[in-house]
Structure formats: C-alpha cells, structure tokens
Image (cartoon, helix red, strand yellow):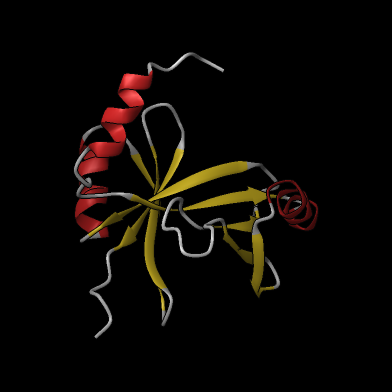
Length: 139
C-alpha cells in the first residue's frame, strides 16, 4: 500500500461533488458463485441475485450513504475484470469524446428496459470503464 498524505484525504472529503461521479462497480469473473461467497464472508456485503448470471452487491451500512453498490457477474469471455461505472447525461456524447481522445467503444449505448442505459469503453491503457445514463429523480 502506498502512503497517502492525510491532508489530501481531508481535502478530498470536503471537495464539492463531481459532475460525473462513479456510481456502480462490477466484478466480472468466470466463477461468480465463488466470488460472491468470498465478498459476502469477508466484507459482509449483501448479495441480491437478479438473474442467473448477475448479483447486485450492497456495500453501504444502514443509514450511511458512504460507498457505492455494485454487482458480480459471469464474464462472457472467461476473464476477470473490475469495471467502474461513471454516471453521465448522454452515453453517446461521452463515447464520442472517449473515441476522440483515443479510447475505444466496447459496448455501444445499450438500454435494458426498466433497469439501466449503459455503455462500456477501453481507456488508453486498456482498462474497461462503464458509462451509465443519469436518470431523473423519481417523483
């Protein structure tokens, strides 16, 4: 683990919210059952299966907004990957920016009705990053 200046951490915690926050993460693996069990037992994360191949992860403490929730899914190509998802207003507009700056679209904007609109890309070093469309607040 690297040393981080405590002043930097305090400054970060007081910083204003960013316009495009990381809102979700995914752990993709060829063996999701084993990985779900590991994280549940080690960290006490709540696991909620939503499909045969995907489980939502609850990492937040009751009454505490600290942290983000995520998911564990079965990778389609047998690889391991951890992906963070950044909330944006327009996934297509951000994919265009990504590609203009040298990144590469992996999954174009995809709508899962009643759930989410998302896309994925590779950054300049080959890391997979997701975009998720910001939804208006429920009324």
